Image (cartoon, rainbow, N blue to C red; front, side):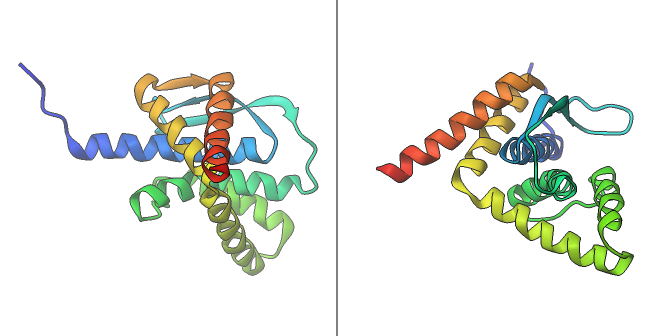
Length: 168
């Protein structure tokens, strides 16, 4: 006897996988090492992207990098679903606002957030990055949790596949 699959639950899980994969891909693209990525829910989250402590490539603007990484989950999920789910990304949104007001006034922080959201959308539009998001999300749906090493491998593979298709 087969158990019917709830299409809403499976689409929410897929959206969560893309959300967490988005964080991971932009982190790697900007030089921040990933420890592990999971779509196993906790008491306050549907998934997590954890970063390695102390393993960060020097950045000209660490604050911008951290905002971009925080926005990347919602941007990747929205690219998949067509809708920004800010209610589901409350912790990310709170982190973005906390960081943005360190740089600008409250009113200017909103403009900064919009500008950086456009920038992260542009980064995700790059073929290699979007292919890597898909590969990581697919692996998350299969395994639920993957190591930073596996994430790095899938990121490299996605970027390489995009380079290979451009070279042809």
